[in-house]
Structure formats: structure tokens, C-alpha cells
Image (cartoon, rainbow, N blue to C red; front, side, top):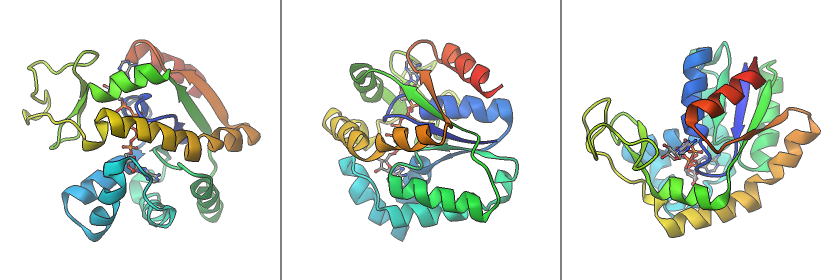
Length: 213
Ligand code: AP5
């Protein structure tokens, strides 16, 4: 099963992607997570990407497309995968179509997760992440057991640099301009299903399971 999770920053692509990945036993591939790991390791790619990420702008298409071509060839993708944060432009979507064709693969569905803008801002400004294991929390909606400390590994939680309010607002503008055209792109191929993304995390996952079967 090959799935794309589409939606604005903060709608819960990572949160739901993790649940789908565990339930269906296929990897979740988050371009944001891959890029953040490159930044942390101070690789050439990471240094280049950081300049864009800190401002909430998109990393250039050629960088992302090359990175994804390599990732989906890995062995863990042989029974399918979930894409979180890719494609994000029409050029990336066209390149992904070519990757599918070249590897004889078929896209199953595109889940468009929809949440109102004000809720997105509150979700993102309240998000805290673990810099060590990548676990994601929210100060109100999904707090860790001990404030500021990761449940999984005990590391001190941090706020992502791009979760500051002014950067969040720019990310939303970038989404509208560059990524929203993909709604039309995937509606045309009849793969797109809209999911109401407000409410309890588990209720949203139930909606998704109904769609995926
Ligand atoms: P990326 O990491 O992909 O960021 P994003 O798309 O902006 O998505 P987020 O991770 O912010 O949100 P999410 O939808 O996963 O929400 P989450 O589940 O965490 O990209 C970062 C940057 O990398 C980009 O700006 C760009 O520079 C670059 N980049 C990445 N991919 C690229 C590409 N393809 N091309 C070019 N550049 C690229 O949830 C958010 C919060 O809400 C959490 O705190 C969570 O606990 C909480 N929450 C989740 N669900 C609920 C709920 N139902 N109710 C209440 N709270 C909830």
C-alpha cells in the first residue's frame, strides 16, 4: 500500500502517519524528519536545507526528489510506504509519478487531512519534540507524563525552530501557494480522500482506517 498524507503544516500528518505505520506495518517516510536528521548531523545537504527550513520556505525540488528516489528503493519499502511531507509541489508530484512508473508501483490513496487555520497555529506553537528519539508531544493536547521530558527516552523536549508563530504563518502561506495545487492534481486521478482532522487523535485514526479498509 502506497499512501500520501497531504495537508497543511500541523494537521497531524506525522501523528497519524505513525499510527498508520504501526497498524499496517509499513514505514512512514517524513521528508521533514529526514531533513532534520541531516541538519543535526551537519551534512552538506543539511547545511543547505537549514537555510530554507528556518524561514519556513521549501527546500529546492531537485534536492528533495533525489533524496526520495533513494529512500523508496530501500528494502523496507517493498510492501509499501506512507509519505508525510512529500510531494509538496506539482514538480515533486510529477517526479513521484515517474518514480512509480519506473518501479512498476501504484499509488493507493492520497489522504487530505483538513484542520482550520487557527487550530493549526495553536497546535504548532504548542508542539514539543524529542531531539533524541523524535517523539512528538503537545503541551496541552498530548503532554508527556513529566513536563518537558520525553516519555520514551527521558531526553529534554525542545520546540522546533520553525514552530515559532511568525515562521508558522509563513509555512501556511507557502503551503497555500505551492502545495494546495496538489489537491486538484490528485482529485483528477480520483485518488484523493478528505479526512476531517479535528477531534481526538484516535477518532481521526478510526476515520482513516475506514477509508483504508
Ligand atoms: P515538515 O516536518 O514536513 O513540516 P510540516 O509539513 O510543516 O508538518 P508538521 O511536521 O509541522 O506537521 P504534521 O502535519 O506532521 O503535524 P503533527 O502530527 O506533528 O517540514 C518541515 C520543513 O522541511 C518545511 O518547512 C520545508 O522547509 C522542509 N521540507 C519538508 N518536506 C519538503 C518537501 N517535500 N519539499 C521541500 N521542502 C520540504 O502535529 C502537530 C501538533 O499537533 C503536535 O504537537 C501533535 O501532538 C498535535 N496534534 C496532532 N493531532 C492532533 C489532534 N487531533 N488534536 C490536537 N492536537 C493534535
